Length: 65
Image 1: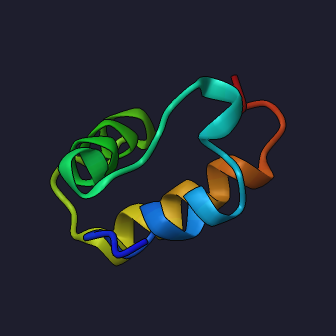
Image 2: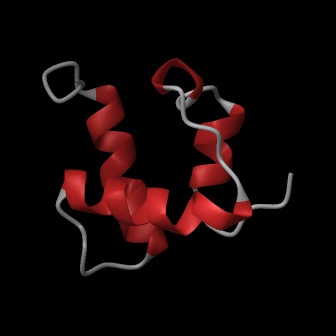
């Protein structure tokens, strides 16, 4: 699976999206990245910055939905 974002492919391989019923594709990977950026408050940042904040959120049980 060739995806376009630096961390969405990683999260997909780790199974983060399957329980949510989200199938990642080239067509929606960038949109997923943007939605994650909004959730973690990094809309104005680049991919590595978004991923860094996303990892913090994933490791914090108080921020998980």
